[in-house]
Length: 472
Image (cartoon, rainbow, N blue to C red; front, side, top):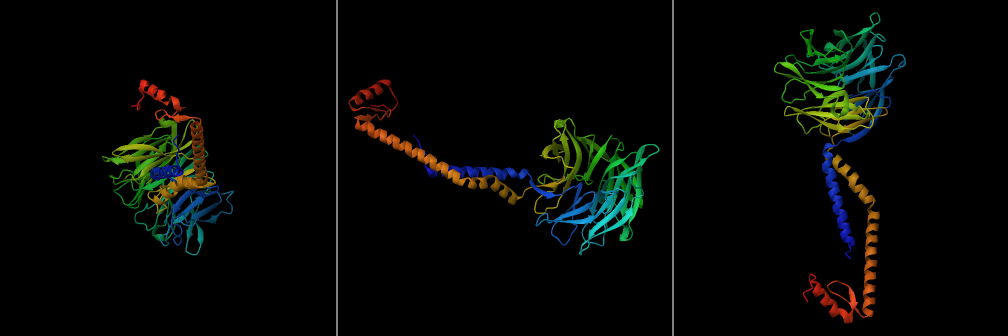
């Protein structure tokens, strides 16, 4: 009987640990590191440099009654309520945007819109958080509904960011709703202005900003809604110019702008239309469209879309779609990259709970790429590309920690195996001595015990059978 010694078993155990550790370390490159933040009742999250004194960026989340800021995302985390609305039951907070709206202040500020159309500016001035009402939209609830807002350098000669707000105005006489686009700006950092820049015949549900018109400086407003198609608004020479980019579309609820194709100068546009993802790109002097995600693929439909560098190992930005499987309602995140003119989808993540909102933002400069923020109540999850430290720690916790925790049990198993082997050896030795005392000898060919006076006959029998190794 072949028996392993303790040293042999220990070497095998150590080799297996090294193999498992290396395999886990290499395999973690394409996975994400999850970090959770408490965001009770959060309906929206934005990320920016709200507090220039504290290191890193901050995450602000909006509830119907207050705005909280979470700082120290890459160091020691802190959480503070920066704004509370007194009469929020009658006039809740509905949406917000982040950007450098005040050119006189360092860092970013928040602009929050309430259901009544009140606009509140929230800023950190070095001595604490301040808030002020900077104006009101021309219409208020219940006839007006604010659906989305986005910030950017929309007016190129301005020293600060502007905000584009889209929504719908209900006409009780005709029981119809029209879409409106408002721009909030503080031209020359003097007076806040709220201007209506576009009216369309149907509600507008989503908006984003980006450089989709390279012939004009600054960003453009890109918006869409119910049977509106996709169109852009450009500020040129003191006037607002509208351009139709996609002529039709039954229901568009999410839109994103970003440079997905590295070789193009203008940004691309991705939007969700009837649970499908369509992209727009400028080529040959006109805007072209391409269907990226058909709702028949994997039996899944998309609800929202974002653009960001979610895979830093591929040139350019990627498109991230958030949706669900029709049959099970299981949430799913799908990524699209532009490689050699072929857009390749892949499954990014399978969230446990469907997020109320997805945000793609780079707030952890210690890691490559941008983070994916899955907003939920009560916990918002941030997915980050792991760095080497993350991979080492993850592999250690997956392999080394359990191995060393169970090391005593492992040695106990080794000792038990050694004990069983020793007992088996002792029994064989006792049996051999007993047989020798009775006049038996062991045949060197078959290892059996035979009477001493019959050994020659037994060997002759081996030769007649022509056993290998007889040679006698």
